Image (tube, rainbow, N blue to C red):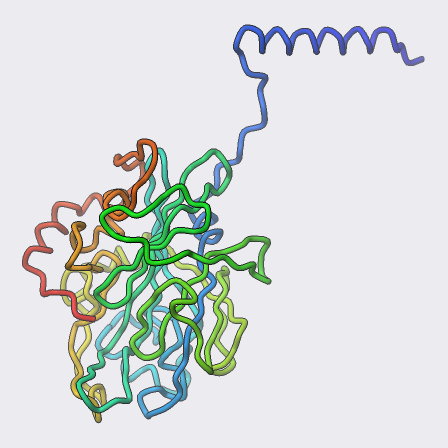
Length: 352
């Protein structure tokens, strides 16, 4: 038989004990927030990505030259054959995006890279093209105690210029650099999250926050995922892209000294063979960059620091309340920080 008096007595004791803990300043234990993996964090904040597509001209390959894909889409890590291989029969241009996560005690910083095998043009006057193209975005996420934190800012890479953004309601504001716009968010049909939205122009693939760039006519809407889909055509509005860790074993960072893939500090190797430059002003060589080669020569942060020292860039670009930590608790780039800084002094200027 259920003894209600005993149950009531135990409940009273528990309530009294909880009250006593609060009275003496001890918090009643609450379930801890499960630690999120870096891959999960990158997937949560990865952008929904609008890619404008131009199908005109022979270098467009019917729009395929504007597809985002893997650096080794053709099955090798040779950057000097990518222009030609983009149009080869049987080659997959399955969608991919690269990411790297570095951490401080106060923030996560996630850099995303979108790679195209061609930076191209169909204009014959005063415009150049080149083999390979790498542009992207940095997101700063405040560690506020929630599972995924809260996104405070974005800095995008459009050729040799950076553009800064804050989402509505952000506590961050302009610093040495003006805020160039408001970062928009959009729900994904493939998960339960609202993602930031970025966009790239056709041909040259400069990247800004949507809708400062957007789709004009044909275009592809890419959604972050763990699978890689290939667009059905140049006007496919639902394509999932696979996220790839820059720091993965054998990944981009591990290949940084591979002379077949990189010509110098963070710069993809590319030449002017095949028909690159045909019918245009020129085809420049070794012109695309990985994140540790990105640079806006007009600002204070050095070459590559958007990825390798994002805490520095953030406090330069923005006014950040509180005391954001500058000490990294996880940053694989840091092992090469001195070498990268020394090499940047003699590296050719970023062209893109």
